[in-house]
Amino acid sequence: MTKYLVQKFFWLREKSLIQISQKTLVSLFPFFLFSGIIRVIALSVFSDRGYIHQLFSMDSWLPWDQAISQVLINFSNFLGGLAGPLATYFAGKYTAGHYGRSTGTAGVTALLVSLIVGSQELLVGPLHEGQLTRINLPATTNILLAIVLGYLIGQIFRLSKASDDQIVDKDFIYQPKTVRPIFLSLLLGISLNLLVVLGNQFNIFQTIRQFLASLTVSSHHLLSTFVMGLFSGLSAWFGNSQAFALNSIADDNFALENLTYAVTHHTTTGIPYPYTLTNLYRSFGLVAGVGAVLSLLVAILLVSRSQKDKKVSLLSIFPSLFNNGASFMVGIPVLLNLLYVIPFLLIPLANMAIAAVALCFKLMPAAVYPVPDGTPSLLYAFIGTGGSLRALAVSILCFTVDVLLYLPFVRMGNRIRKDLKVKGESDEAI
Image (cartoon, rainbow, N blue to C red; front, top):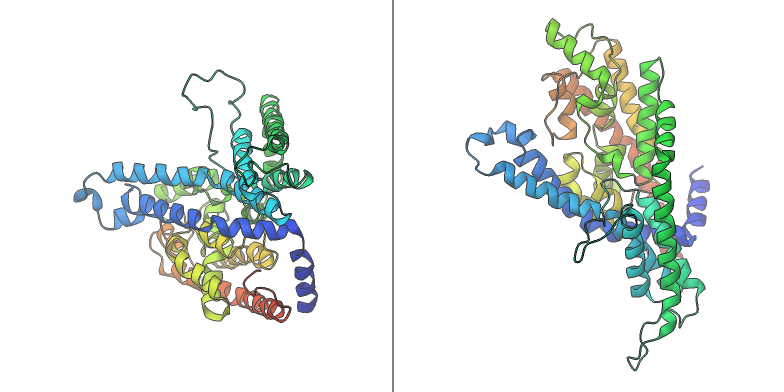
């Protein structure tokens, strides 16, 4: 079975889209790392709802804390909003380079197309002189779609002649032919922009979202929670930034009813909904972050032979501890990586199953209380249960199991690198 998976991995690795996707994700790593660190500091340290802020009562002695928090969050959001355009830029650049075309021209063109597609109001209203307020950085981004868009731009440059995308020649004379691939790319961007505008006007996207949401609705709350956990993990693996958003207890109606019951009866025993998203997925499914990537980080530090992966893991420890593993996921990369897709999707479900059994046999209380922003993922259930050591023990058990489950896949990565080295290829390129 392992040999078959390795063979399939090598076959997929030869595809240009896979190679370009990996290069693009790794190129995004420093931007995601800075954004993640800044966001953790803003939410956990300076925000009045932050974990560290409340732990050390920083309101009483730290001046300008909320102003600092807002500045840091805004800067983090700015970097996060650039994720899509940057992914499109790098994908366009690497695609053009893969086929021997001008990487700089293709990259900049891809960046412009990304901004056009993401700014639905750009073409439907007047722009006053000097104002670009209708060019938007999206709050949510799908990295896969951004990479595919950049890949298409690169293909446009590839299908043109080699001289068509050369802005100046060796004598610094402008080459008019460069207009053709740029024009076709911008035309693609405008067309996609109009399609998005029409989709919003006719509620097509809203209908699709409602349909997907209906797939998770079930009278059996345990099954529904597992399905939503699986969908969330799959969405994250495809690079949907919404899967990494911090969700409060207010987003879970069942959890709010549990909280009301606990406050009214002064106990969590007998709560009406023991198997909610808050009790299972957020408290235990994410005990090691989205896709249990914190446990993968530990597994890599323990047994990986890749110096690059170990370096990325060490740099990503701080944000990953606070459930912000996006930088780690693009730096390895984990996103769109078939090597890790199975544990990424199934390990959180295994954690939820362990927690469900513990709740069923009343081995621990349910996590019904609000948790401060920026709380380390390992402590989420401990705080959500009001300080239950039994819940903390289950969290540690889940984390330990997660590391053990990831170890065989890290070792498989070692084997793939060994085979790549035998073939004379870079042993870091998986």
